[in-house]
Image 1 (cartoon, one colour):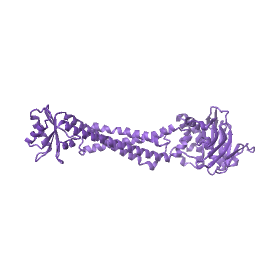
Image 2: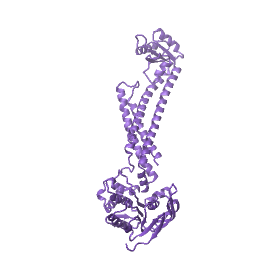
Image 3: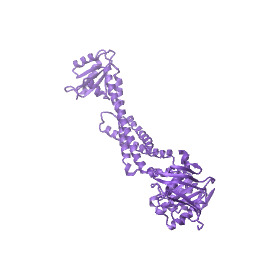
Image 4: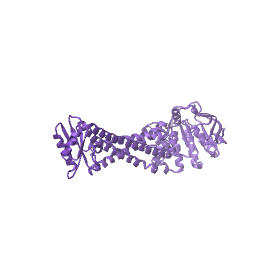
Length: 241
Length: 269
C-alpha cells in the first residue's frame, strides 16, 4: 500500500492481524535493583494510535525503549510484531529494529552529518542505495517543514526543528510501529497541534503509533495508556476529541 | 559516496596519526637499511668460499686501502693461490676483522684468498710478515662462521625492531579507537537502534582503521625514502643504499593499513 499526503509517500506491504505490540506482565529493573516497570500488560493493535501519559519518571521512555528493542524486559513476555523479543537472535533483532521507528528523547543525532543524512539513517542502514531513497527522504523532510534545512547540521537547528528531525528520521523508512517520545519540557501549543496532525496523517498509512504526551489535549480522540507507579491502565478514546 | 557514520575523535585522538606515521617511518627506514646491508653482506659471505680470508690494516705510512691492494697483489702471486680479491666493505666485515685479530681502532680491510690447499692461513701469515704488511690470515671455515654469526645477529635486529614497531602500532591504533568508541557511544547506540548489525559496525571501524593506517603508512614510507636519500647524499651510514632497497619501504604502507583494519574492531564492541 502506498499512501501519499502533503507530498510524503510511505510504502507499506500490508498490515498484520497480530498485535503490533503485546506486553504480558512485563517488568523492568535496573542494575541497582530499582523497578522501572512492574507487571505491565497491554496490547497495541496494528494500525492503532495510542497516547501514553504519566508523570515524570514513571517509565514512559523505558517502555518505548523496550518496544524498540533498545532494552530487554527483566520479567514477563514482550511481543513486538508477533515475535517474543526474548527469543530473537541477533539477525532477527536487527531486522525487527528496522521495522520500528523511534523518535526517542533526548534526541541524539550524528552531529557531523547533515540534516538530510541524519533523516536518511534508516534507509541507509537498511542497505538501500541512496538513489533509491533520495526522493523519499526529500519528501519526508518537506512534509515536516525541514526541506530548507536539509544541508544544515543538526546543531544549527532550533529545539523544535530538532524534534521534527527526530520524527523525520523515525518515519523515513516507513516503519510498522512509530514511537514518539515527548521532548524535554513538553510541546508548545502550536507544536503540539502541528505534531498531532502529522502523526494522524502517518497513522492513516496503517502504522501503529504510540505517542508520549503529558499534555491532555494531545490525547483527545485517541486511546490513552496511563503509566503510574510502574503500572499501566488503558482508557478509551476521549469522545471530546 | 556517503560519509562515515562514525564521528572523529577530534583533538583527543589527533596524536594517533602522527604517531602512526612516525612508527611507519622508523619501520620503513629499518627495512631500507636492512635490505641494503643484507645485499652487501651476503656477497661477502659467498666470496669466502675459497680457502682463507686475510685482514690487513694500515701500518706506518701505508694506509689500510693501500695495504689491502698490496696484499691482494702479493698473495695472488704466491704459489698455490688461485685468486686473491679485495673485498668491498660489507655487513659483518668489521666483526670478522676483529675476530681475525685486527687491532681495535684500526681501519681494517679484507682480502679473500682462493686456494685449492687447505689450512693455508699459516703460509699466508708468513708471506704477509715477510712483505711487511700488517695483517693476519684465517682459515675460511672460521671466518665464514664469524661472518654468518654477525649477519644472523643483524638479521635478528631486523626482525626484533620491526616486531616492536608493529606492537607499538597496535597499541596506538587500540588507544585511538578506544577513545573514539567512548566519544561515539551515543552515535553507536543510535545506529544500532536504526538497524545496524554488529558486523556493519565492525565494518565501519575496520574502514576507519584501514584508511588511517594506510594514509599514515604512506606518509611514513614516503618520509623514510626521503630520509634515506638525504642520508645517502650526505655520505651514508656505511651502507650503500640502492634504488631497489627503497622498495622495501612499500610493505609498511600495507602493514600499517592492515594493523589499522585488524586492531580496531577488536576493541570497539
